[in-house]
Length: 469
Image (tube, rainbow, N blue to C red; front, side):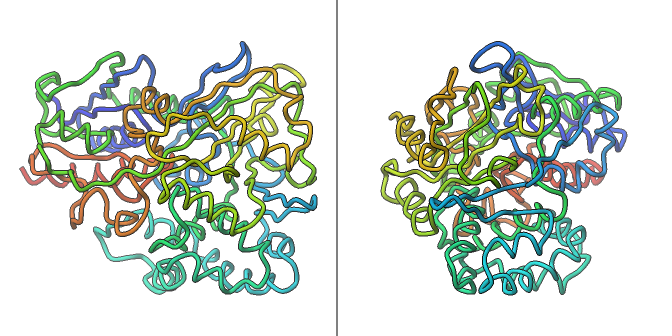
């Protein structure tokens, strides 16, 4: 009998397996697809030689992850590559606000009225970042926080809606960039705890940047897999699980899946019926014959570029997708240009580029024209650079990855109490009514992102259960 079986070979499932194998337990991972990866994959989606990331591409939470930093993943081929700027937010006049590694440079891009405000908000938290990120990403707390005062200071700023926090800024340059940071959670800006989302992305960028993995996001998954195998763990691909009986006997079963899939496979009935899925995304991957012709020079040297004229435009786009049930006419876009940092991702002189906008859950329309019109506003001539494109709306995303219910790449709405208390209101979110079944996906704390911390935290819960029996 195995000690633990993990269902799903995404970053969280692989991390959970590694953590248990490091403790000397026998572990096997089962993945329905023919390769590992989940939300961290790399594929030739457009033309030969153009290597795209179907989901996550830039990894501010990955490079800052306490779980990943405690593993020797560099020995297994994981290398982080940085652009000159982690992120830029261009404006219609050709200027841009930036998220730089330097707090001072970032603050200066907001203008004189808000520079001091931003420094006072961010600098004290950044000094304690390594401790803060461990406390924040280990929620719900299983031990006392290492720095309760800094965590409390972070909570006072971050737990109210981001719209409250943004009242500190006088100009819209700062509000627009911060709104874009919050929008990575794919939820309206006025929700509880959304200020924390923006702060985490800003602090992560200042601390260690927003890098890509050399060769693509698949490198993260491949490094975790290689490390797991060296620890004695096994990985089985092309192995679809429909019920627990499809798996070998084990003391614990850990699911890197949506709550919906877990309930179906483990026979938990309506246990997760109140779990909410959020808005979907419409994603485009491009093969380009040259770099994106951004008007703002800062955007040309940034790894990630947020595309939305102002905070009101971003709020309206999120509101349309999340609450009004329609695709926005002028979508807010999150874009990543990996080949700015990693030329190996495309043939010489050519580039890969990635963009997505928010749409209602399950939306089956085509946002391509709206996305490209928005890009042309900030990068005139963009369409002339396109060699090929691959599009994926909510139905295609859900078909590629069953955890993306309705095209929700966050594996559950990141809003309201579900921002922190997911997948259920519980002091033990990784456990289920079945004593041997656990959940470790992005549906559990600390939530979405390629950081492995949901798997790390779930592995601790499994270890405690196994040790007690």
